[in-house]
Image (tube, rainbow, N blue to C red; front, top):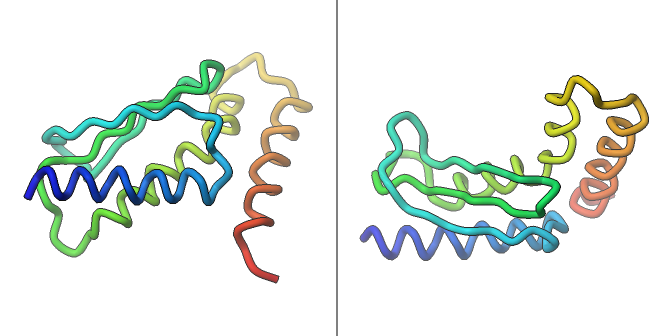
Length: 111
């Protein structure tokens, strides 16, 4: 069951990565037991690299596709989060990151 869950996670994550316009990131996948979550992601924005992990344990009521979408949304917001956590970020840099997210959401949300 673990391999099937892991394969499904990768498939769904890649689907959302493409849907959110995040194809510029190289994503590494891992599967291991996570103590307090269904999944996690680490992003190195400037290197366009991410590592996402799905928990080996199943979580009742939380389909793996929901976890994949959740972690892909973290990737979508990576540039914005990077700027927000950096105390030397300028207003222009944050506005640019915000615009990037808005343009991607415009493509996703129907009129």
